[in-house]
Length: 429
Ligand code: PMP
Image 1 (spheres, rainbow, N blue to C red):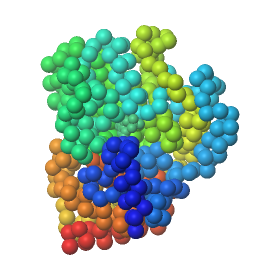
Image 2 (image 1 turned 120 degrees about the vertical axis):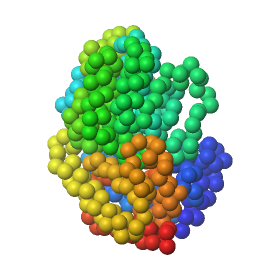
Image 3 (image 1 turned 135 degrees about the vertical axis):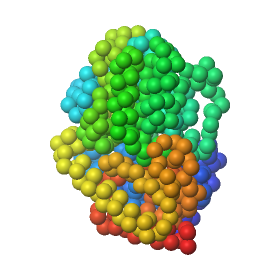
Image 4 (image 1 turned 90 degrees about the horizontal axis):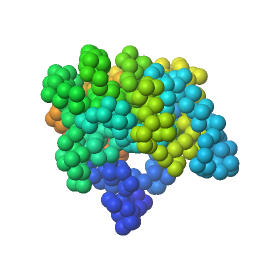
């Protein structure tokens, strides 16, 4: 049933490190062979052996209205014949910036890049350049891409593979990265007091998705906002996952807290390689060519990437009920999973915000990286395979959020709930 994927994985390992171009895809922690995808449409992935899966990763977030969404595909096709890159400005880039500004709060100026990593790396450099300070605070289990400064106590693949320190990153770099537990405002206060006038930025996933889904507790983000105001620290919301997913205005809108800088990725590019960072004018004006904080990109604002993202964002802006539909579907899944998990008597926690959701097999509430890591993640790995076998494609790690897409039908959700009941019986039975 996975014959072609097995032989493709063997072949891939001859030429690609670990057979994959991004580590979590290798299924290393869940074990087994990654399935090689041939195509996707709507809510479904199809692998090289012809198996169909209901997709809960949505390319790790971008495909919020489903795969091969027709308006996006058509826009890309029409644009591609006009050349795939110019390296010179286009009107479309202005339209994209104006559209983002009309949806997202606190974005006076916005610069397009080609990945979430670039967006976060550039926002941090800008915060340092703006404040003249070197250190910054990030939270354990949060992932902000693979720029050196962020690979300290990071989530996602580093949590999955238990990579504590990354060879190749110098002490000089990582010494400027200060970390706290997520949801621990007292720890933030202490770090800031201990490093008075040294901290350029605090960067956070306002709803964390890289240690499973973890919600900010009431007062946590608000408390950091207050500290940043008092201490002249740049507050960066990493909205690579949450941006244009939790709402048109992302986590800033949902949590009603303002960021100074915000980073985007995933949904903003509709599955094309796109990221962006933006924010308050006084800070963004420090970026070259206005200021001396240098940042650039040969493919930044690429026309194919821009038309894909622009088309998707426009749909989201013009049909606000899409968010309600997506949230209703995720709430339905949440409730169904709750029922079968409760009946199974396996300890569990489901965390959810909007269309981000995940299961931790934990007796304790999961509010930070330590509680996520303390869960029964080997059980999650078995559950993952039992679900895959039943045609449900979950993220291959408990340290990742699931992302729902609006192409999912209620029948798909029912099938997922039913598969969970069967899978739990199989893995504990
Ligand atoms: N920030 C967050 C919150 C992310 O989830 C990710 C990717 N999962 C990134 C940054 C990095 O984005 P990219 O993989 O596009 O470089």
